[in-house]
Length: 295
Image 1 (cartoon, rainbow, N blue to C red):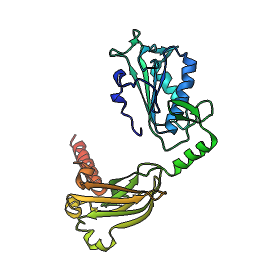
Image 2 (cartoon, rainbow, N blue to C red):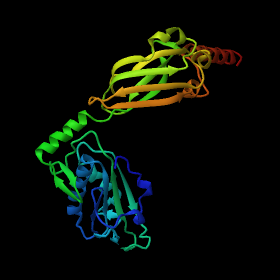
Image 3 (cartoon, rainbow, N blue to C red):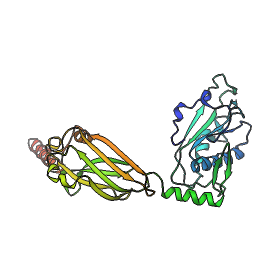
């Protein structure tokens, strides 16, 4: 379960038993114990593909009363959020309070079932508040043995890289437009080949260099190259230009990022380069001085 859309989770969507992606806890669970269970489950799901922790249901996934909106003086959602943040590093997660039993079980007045969706993580291992690492073993959250923790560390270094693109004006020359290939994850992409088709007016004369070859792109080392000028950017870059990026991870697995580029849309309808902006500012200043002199 690499991505969980928590907006689609309601009481009817809760399965009738726990499995490797769902864990249940009863409304009778004391808050202190529930906090420990949440921390362990968040660690376990983050270290093992993601999942959903649901508190306020019985063993069949039916609401069994739910939890009051306050834990002491603290809002229930804030209390859960605080518990999740005790897991280090904190994985990506979402919290949803379900206040409609929808015909399954019972919910006490003002009470809710708590659903916590934890995304699959490539930044593990994730440690719970008791300083232990957990994983999912079937329908159970269990402490991870040492060799599994080592494997999770290795997974962090061999996670899937993801690349995307970005247009920008060149930092050292506002009249030049650059296309950048950037990493969306912490994992490096290696042996990258970048191709554009068709090549625009300026790049056509450099056709022999395509596809461009880049040894590595990661979160600290994006790759930018000049593709057009600021003026007449669409004419010189071209329309319906297809960007095709092929790359590998450190294990040698192949990936592809392919999209059609719209250079003008990337900058929006209002585009002033640095020189033009300075001229506008000077003109406004001149108008202001002229108006003041007439007073």
